[in-house]
Image (cartoon, helix red, strand yellow):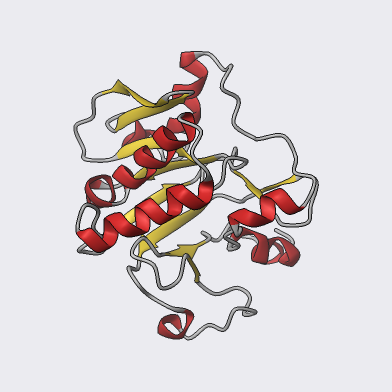
Length: 210
């Protein structure tokens, strides 16, 4: 994986930036068949996990459950911005804590609410206790080959490599000893936030790919 791709993976795009540049077409295709949407959601985790997980597909009105699970995991396509496509599988802890905020975000988007309003309402929900941060360590699978993020100032989406995430509520870069420019080290998404996570890209076995 090119070294220049690493910073892009860990970038959380400030939503106002989306309106300041010519943005590409959103990665997620609502016209996909139900079967294709299920396959995309489940692509986030190994079959041993995804086949026993609860699966949600993203429709224009929000998420719809299409499979009842037995292992506590939840697989769905996350979108941290409306342009992204992020197949994700939360474990039981993430399903009970972070997942409801994702449901809320897509329900609000379907109603035409702005990203700024959605974020403010989620922040208020954490402060009021409506939402809560993960209370113990856990894993998030993002092993799909169909993940795409928007990078500010670009006119195309960036393909992201398969990776794993681990809950790190309210953690900052200082907690992992890695300054923002450090390469080949675990990194944080949403540092300082209740849904902050630490990212690790599994080794591929080739020195050239690190």
